Length: 287
Length: 287
Image (cartoon, rainbow over all chains, first blue to last red; front, side, top):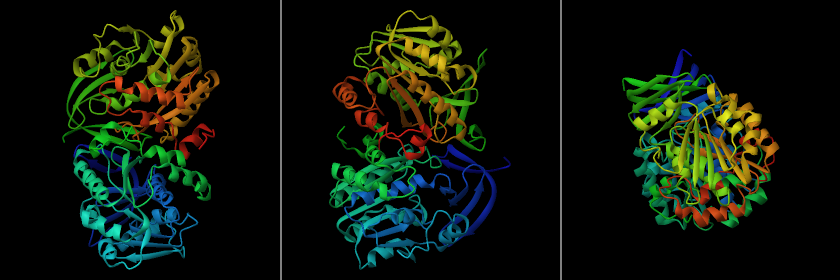
């Protein structure tokens, strides 16, 4: 294995991935976008040195960021994705028969360009339901005139261009852009790394202050730091972990093709938090 | 970070842990036992180059290997642990008020020696309920005269001295050493690494052929390959994921001190498997 990609989290702990060759590398005005061909994980997208996704494990992140909130909404028709220029989240969203329109707002055209060329199985960019906007998600959400049933925030870590996607003003704008039964989901890092704790607590607190329901949920992503990744689902009307939503998932899940991670049992179980995680949110989660 | 410990799984993907210094190293007749002081994870035990545990993350493995099976048994009094020379599993077992006697059978005295000296917070070796046997677990189980309510198999990977702990004969011997409501749990590697699949399938098949109930469950262990670790719980009488067991956990969990991962919600949710994992077991898990 002459070539290795290394990502260190917490400064001292890291993941090493064996690399065959570099396929794409572009320093844009926002970030360094790279795609590598790996030994074991298919092609791998890396932004500013941080793993975004591999062809082998991307289904976990995209299924969990999508299907948990989409089944939380009783009838999602209009969906906004902020970030997600690889197209994987949009692909999962468009599997829901009720969805009529998806706005995908990616700040960096090079992410889309690299994905179309080197991760062609991930996106479904030619789907007529999808409209791609190369634009800053924060400016987009502040000028939006239509409303959305679901907003999915598919950004990278809270440093660099994605930093604003973890701020209170942004979540308030999202809330205003949602319909009456609107649902939002966002990725919120791993509870295992101490330096993420403030960001996790802040996002939970912001969402909790504006939405009726806010819950953290977890999934196993092998190429992200620690392998435990958290997301949050906030909802104006339906409890993401409630009986009604679970029943909806059980009734409709067979209409979603090609699921490899999400199922109704995973939906329910992903909201169960270990004590050291729920302590982080400083709330009694009811177990 | 001048010193690094590296463990590669699947030949190309690995974990790097920043090291302060080597504290213990002994090539025994069975294996190379090492303890390192790390930058971020406290002291770290490594056997034959594979991470066994760190002071910071050991609670996940030990709580999940212990409390899922111990709450599955209605009244566990006698418990056998095979492997587990670090003492962490025994520590968790002895938190259950019903437990009167624990036999800990570790093949390699150096594991116990290293743990007592460099991982002193993990074990509870002076507890009068604990009897330590430095012996091969396979020969122990074949000559055992008493019966156990719970058997916990706390071995390393299915190479080297732990190989026999993944074989059919061994599980049959365990079955015979269990009381009428007896429960067994064992660690079974990560579903993310293809080379473990045969071993996972075999263990599931062996247990399923002798026990009334056999279920895989999952937990997040950041220093194990991929961060997703599987265990299996097999039971002669009570369904480990059943309503009765969950109710028992809810009623009795407050008697267990110092839990940081396990709770009744985690107990239930850990049995929910993503599709790509349940496919591995080639069974319909009912979702």
